[in-house]
Image (tube, rainbow, N blue to C red; front, top):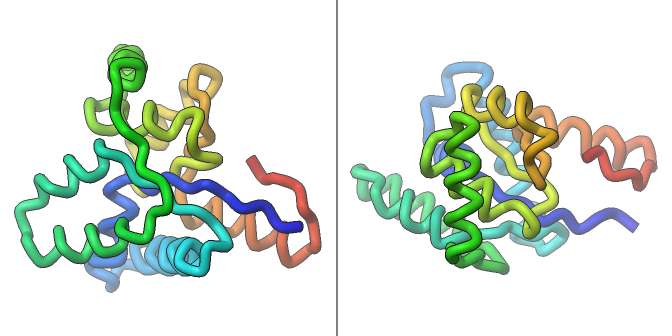
Length: 161
């Protein structure tokens, strides 16, 4: 049986399909994200939302983009509520040098998601350098998608995380 991944996409990922697709990296990341979202739409996998995601998306100045991203996030089957425990964990992560919203997103994903995906190189680099202190795997969606589909094509059921 193929694993039903619980996936937390950060705001960078949710915005990626609406970015300039003329750059090869952006186009490839978009393709991976759209495939991931497609599997979430069919409920093969589960997209997670959070009040932190909703708050950050609500701050998007471009109304059309905000609506597009909110529409994608509307397929989420579970919403993680920010509480005192999540906020405290985010403060701990900020001490590692992770930015405020990023720390809050990781704190929301910990214990809820199998994978936290980001296209933000700085966040990914920080998360990888502190991976022993995180309770969720952080990855680039393109790399993660390639690993998961490669395992699937080979008939493996192992979790790449």
